[in-house]
Length: 172
Ligand SMILES: CC(C)(COP(=O)(O)OP(=O)(O)OC[C@H]1O[C@@H](n2cnc3c(N)ncnc32)[C@H](O)[C@@H]1OP(=O)(O)O)[C@@H](O)C(=O)NCCC(=O)NCCS
Image 1: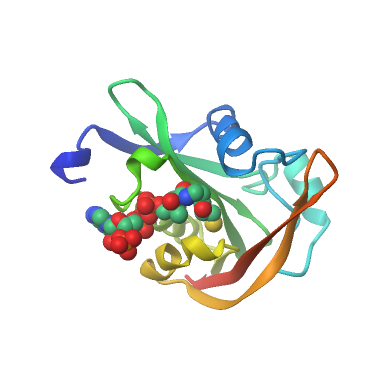
Image 2 (image 1 turned 90 degrees about the vertical axis):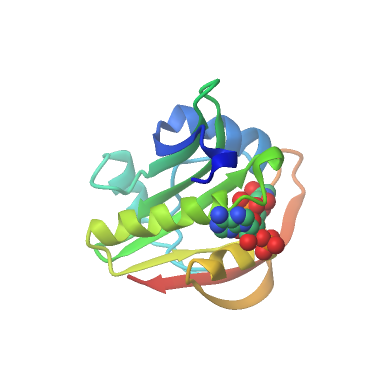
């Protein structure tokens, strides 16, 4: 990393470190945040993923990556990935704290997740970015589909959060 970010390090982190960031910052008011979802693309699900993840098989329940500030040990940016099938891997949960945006940290995390999936032998990685994050996904080589309104989740108050997302994939 350059001199401005030299005290930052990218490493694998624990579920317990990424969960509070997802719950408080990325998906506030989303109930039942799991380390994985059964989605295999923008529209289809494979319920088998629940069982494999619960049984902690291979990478179905997820791996978590964070960029940490070495001075205080805090995670300043994060992403994760989980297995969807023998050949498919999903990248999910990208978040960079506002103070650290504009330095390329999201691209570093996406690239790291791509490299991880490739090294483990997966053939394709996919994600479902919000429209604002699309340039970041494009920059690391994802092919982006059309943006459409997506019912992201039902909030704790019963209302539905609708937001523009696009399917993104990259052949490994
Ligand atoms: C969207 C989000 C992930 C972007 O994070 P980021 O770290 O700023 O994104 P990038 O890594 O793409 O870097 C952004 C900028 O830094 C620039 N940059 C600076 N130094 C760089 C470097 N060394 N390498 C690459 N890019 C660099 C990029 O060119 C880019 O500039 P641009 O915005 O003018 O094109 C972040 O704002 C965020 O977490 N938002 C809220 C949650 C969210 O939307 N998450 C995504 C869900 S899909």
